[in-house]
Image 1 (cartoon, rainbow, N blue to C red):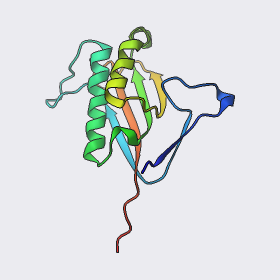
Image 2 (cartoon, one colour):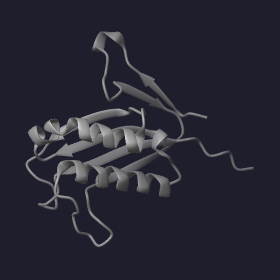
Image 3 (spheres, rainbow, N blue to C red):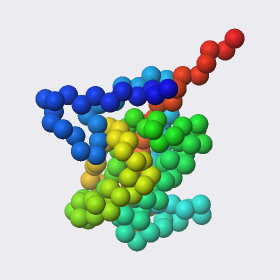
Image 4 (cartoon, rainbow, N blue to C red):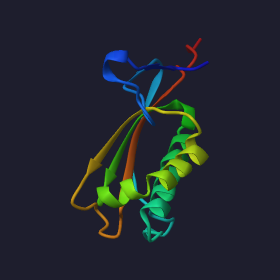
Length: 138
């Protein structure tokens, strides 16, 4: 049973790659920002596409550990160090999105930043998911 309802009013124009609003019913999962850190705490990947794949994959790993799936994502915030580079690689980033999220489009914000915690990080992804409500304890 889906816990999300996607709202895209015609007054705001047709969204592409995101939803304008998402209603959710259930348990909320707040997902910390993920960069391209590997299990040893080292940034991996030299390009924004490689780092986006790793960061989004890590966010999904955290979501799965909390009992959710990619279809439970209600909102994503993408922090981007070089917006021009990100936009120049938007097709490849879109392909990574399709691979990891399919045609699931939560509410999304892309925010340009001067730098991230790890100076080598080019992108960071933070999210919010809504899981189905737990059955009432008897």
